[in-house]
Length: 267
Image (cartoon, rainbow, N blue to C red; front, side, top):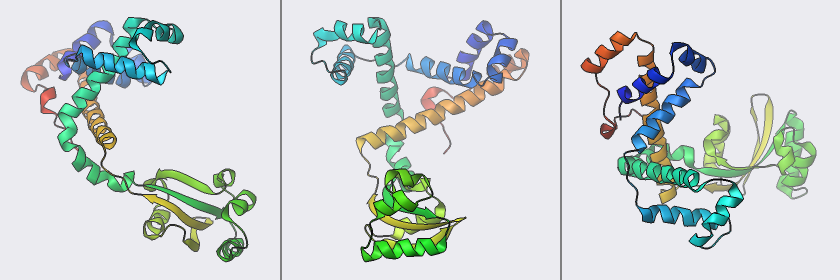
C-alpha cells in the first residue's frame, strides 16, 4: 500500500473545496486513514474457518450457543448478514496483518513501554491544609480511623466519591512526584503527608501490578505499531494533497512511497 493508491480516489471523488471543508471540520485525516487501512486490508486473505469462528464468538457474546442461531442474532441486532460478516472479516484481516508484520517487534516495544503499562491501586487523601493532612495521617496510622471513612468526609478531590481508592490505573497517569513515591512504596504502608502543587497528600499503595508480556499485550503492541504506520501514510497523503497536481504526478515518478511490505516506521 502506498499513498498514490489513495490520492487518485480522493481527487476524483472529492474536489478541492470538498477536501477543504473536510479539513475544516477535522474529517479529512480520519477519511485518509480509513482509506489507507481499508486498501491494505483488502489484500489480506482469510479462511471460512476463521470467519465461522468469529461468528461463533459473536454468538457467544450475545448469549447464543450454535451457528444455526445466526439469523436470530441478526434479527436482534438489526443488521444484515453481509454487514456483520464484512465487519467481522475486517477485524480478522486487521488482526492477521498486525501480527504478521509486527509480532516480531512487539516484545521490544513492550520493554520500552513497560513503565507506562504497570498498573497501581492506591488510597489517596487530597487536602489543602497541612495540619489536617497530618492529623488524618496519624488517625489512619494509629488505627483510630480508616482511610475510606476519612476520604468520604475530608477528601477535597474526586477520590471523595470512591472511598479514597484510585485505580487500577497506569502508573504514569499520576503526577511525576507521586509516581516516584509509589514506585518505591510497599503495599499497605502509609506514606507521611507530602505536598504536590497546592495539595497535601496522604497516600497508601494498595497494589502494584507489573505488566507482563501476554498474548493480549502483544496484540496491543502490534496494534499501536500498525496505527503508527497508518498515521505516517496519512501524513504523506495529506502532504501530497497540498501541492499542485502536476507536481504531485512528478513526485510519484521520482519519489514513490515506501511499499506497505517495508513497514518502515519511526519510534
